[in-house]
Image (cartoon, rainbow, N blue to C red):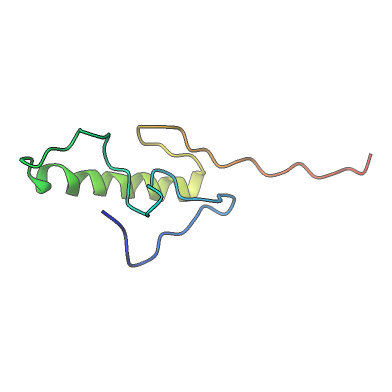
Length: 83
């Protein structure tokens, strides 16, 4: 599943979206967690909704609050004091 419109934006200090595969698909579940006999309305749709919630929080705070790996945005660089 992929968000097409509007395009997903990055946190101001991020270089990539968290929890997406290289092709842009959202990382909604672990490999093998979803089976073909499962209803999309009980799995993929709520998982996508939860992903979008965590994405919106990440855009504001710079830290992924969902499960999985911690995708923290690097802190701002310290100013060089010239010394």
